[in-house]
Image 1 (cartoon, rainbow, N blue to C red):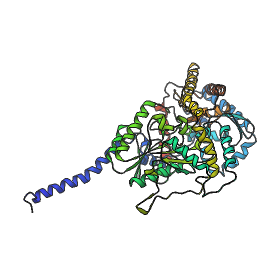
Image 2 (cartoon, rainbow, N blue to C red; image 1 turned 120 degrees about the vertical axis):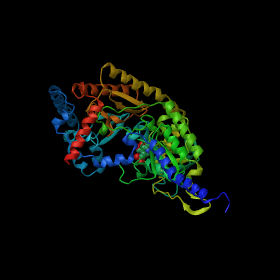
Image 3 (cartoon, helix red, strand yellow; image 1 turned 135 degrees about the vertical axis):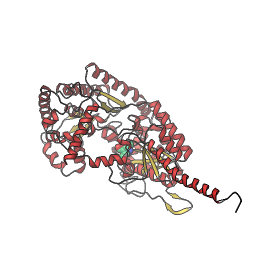
Image 4 (spheres, rainbow, N blue to C red; image 1 turned 45 degrees about the vertical axis):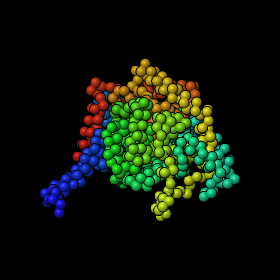
Length: 555
Ligand SMILES: Cc1ncc(COP(=O)(O)O)c(C=O)c1O
């Protein structure tokens, strides 16, 4: 034995190694914990545990009307306003009310969305009297007609698909279907129109390869799967609050019955997240939904979660661009795939999408919704080094992904119509000009709301809007029904997300603005925005928490 390798030196070396082995994971753990958002949304396990323990309870109509300790004369006013509003809504669709009620018990999707339109404490009371219609049979310009002939301005935007107006997509489907009609719904061989789509998608994304899928969810699944395959690493990093479709691999928290151990949901726009990316060696990819720029670290808002008036938005284009470019730098340095999920925002921000708008290149980009020209689709574009589904030198080591309906000729036909318009100079000037236009529209509406002293504002990222409430209230969710009564068609998330299409003329928008102002005025007159001196957001939260605890103890 060498004279320096005494038993003492060996022992010290062993102890050092043991400390390293024990301390390093603990240190990594600490860094990871510090990169989680302090809210419940940042703690998947805790939020799941809480969700599993949260008891249901319900207000009687009288409890609901007075849940903010409003004085009797306000409660009386609300009672009458609720009767008037529910009668007004029911009178619009008298025939279909019963059919809808029957259908609801057989269509699980309908049951789900209906269940979460208002905070659960109010659900029984509200749903007994207000039954939003579900059928539509015609669109024209920016309006949509229900089965009983009522026209409404479309603010739901078909979950974001409707960027250019329904007439545009009707044309895409008609012309596109005509183009592939002689082939028909053949799968396997591609219709030749596919090759032009591939060229256009490569041009738009600036990436090498393309794969077609049936939905945005599938495109995201494929991106993450390929990133894991090529990096040979396990972890996916996504950001607190971001939605990426309903695959359980991108839903580490509430809503997903499967526990995922391979996802880190970290804090958006925060240095601690960059430290995790720099320090670890097991991260395959970082997934970005640029929609989060509007409300970093918070989920998309829905009226079902609107227990008080805390909801807000703060879009800062320069700050988000800086953040993305920092992420880009770390991902490049560490061999992590940077994936942009542009399924929702895609072509709304710029013809080149979020990559162009924020000035940052991704390694893979997912598109969906509008890119199908009105038909269902998901698209993944990426660098060749990440898109290959096999390894040249390992013939059995493949990353298997196929899908019966991918590259469906009818989808390829309508997509072609969309893509050809998406690269035109007309589209560029339309989208580029839309930001100032929609900011001005939002600003103008906010000024009018302020002048009328109404506790309602809008925040926007271009054509995607969210309503916010500057004054504490327990009834903000009621506004969705006043808006419907005024002839505005909303998605099931209500005032949490309004999606406009780019074909809204000034005249159309003026009509929507009038309807919003009138709805807000009715909400105010109905007493729903009564504001007691002691009512603020923390006190509302405390009340709800107390009720939850009491129900839990009783259960
Ligand atoms: C950003 C984002 N990614 C993925 C998806 C999932 O797309 P799809 O509903 O087509 O599966 C959505 C849907 O809303 C989305 O907004």
